[in-house]
Amino acid sequence: MRTAPTILHLDMDAFFAAAEQAAKPSLRGKAVVVGGLGPRGVVSTASYEARRFGVHSAMPMAQARRLAPNAAYLVPRFTVYRAISEQVMELLGRLSPLVEPLSLDEAFVDLEAGGSADDSASARAAGEQLRRDIRAVTGLTGSVGLAASKMLAKIGSEQAKPDGLVLIEPGTERGLLGPMSVRILPGVGPATGDHLRRAGMTTVAELAEAGEDELVRLLGKAHGSSLYRMALAHDERPVVSDREAKSVSVEDTFDVDLHDRVRVRTEVDRLADRCVERLRASGHSGRTVVLKVRRYDFSTLTRSETLRGPTDDVGVVREAAGRLLESVDTTGGVRLLGVGVTGLADYTQEDLFAQAAAEGPKAAAAKAAESAEPAE
Image 1 (spheres, rainbow, N blue to C red):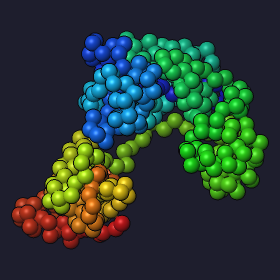
Image 2: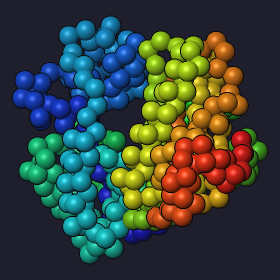
Image 3: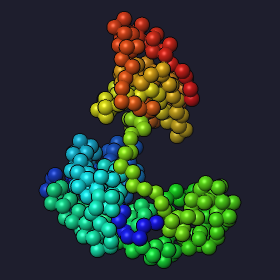
Image 4: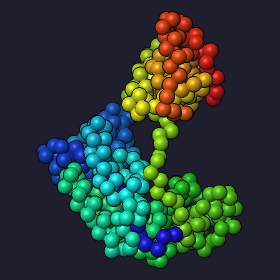
């Protein structure tokens, strides 16, 4: 563990909704909800004005409309959000070469590696300057956590929300964590939280008191040991700047279940086209095509096919996704479809697929099939 709070965690406040409010003055100070607007839509982000009515992210949109019927409901505009995110990440890059983006609106920064801070005073000054710069450049606000570890820095930014800064002094971590819910720790979701609660552990202090052996017995070696270390405020994870994308995918939830097999295949083709667009935009190609199908009863099936070489050819991805669809029973209806590409690389196997395409659609499909190794 470090002796100075030189790891910074930035989390933009209600990012999607705040971006819409900044772009449209008529929305400022009003409840704004961003997400899917269909009957099965889900809230992506709710402004703080909307949160006063109980609206929150991951909530079904229908429920949000009941809680805040007069809010403005908007579909996400990712092009806008990415442009703002790039501005924010550029500001973070001025602080240090070690910036670890977690999403469009969240990132860790190693201030020590960039020479921006080496003690509490300089770390606080860097964090406050960052918040001022973000407001000046984007018109938006962000919350900052500063600590000697990534886990504590993220907890600090949560405590700082909205539009604040919290610095956790090294040596005070266990006292801070002790009374907190076990759910504050990374890796403790609802299921693990319930499991620990049944074992009589609801706070971080109770986890530490239980000891490593008991947590290993309850959760297994890897998870139990990791959780015990975190309960003691031990987190040695470094800030990693090179977080390469491992996959590219798109998916759609349909307002009404799809029953027509031809329509399902048409949607798979459309998703494959969008997936390849994103793949090419990222400068990658991929080796494995993945199909995701959620059926009428909420059961979710995933099928994949690995090609002999990476590709960004839309015809190849379409054909592979179509073959995967043939192995899935869609009787009863489909509520969600997704197409993805994994095993990313920065090159394509141009010769195989370009030659196949030149020989015509049927030959292209045949060559793509020959190059496939089906796998679930």
